[in-house]
Length: 84
Picture 1 (spheres, rainbow, N blue to C red):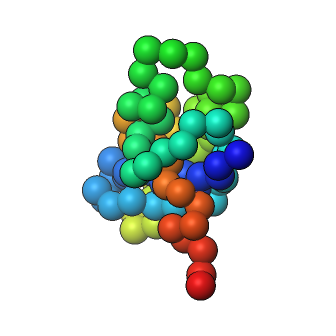
Picture 2 (picture 1 turned 180 degrees about the vertical axis):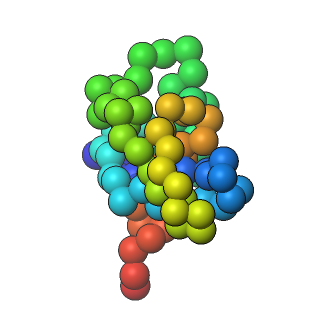
């Protein structure tokens, strides 16, 4: 089953921050895609729904914010962050 790291597009600084979370989903994501885009029009898996209960930290401002906006949470193939 494919594994993906999660990245958030930050509303505070405009950058992207890794969430230090990894999820396994049946869908194969060919490119970086938001959760909203991938699951539009269908039910998202429980592990994706659970993300909304977490918070993220802006690494530039130090502010915490909720992960409520699925348009800002992106799935990135786990191999993207793996070292060779």
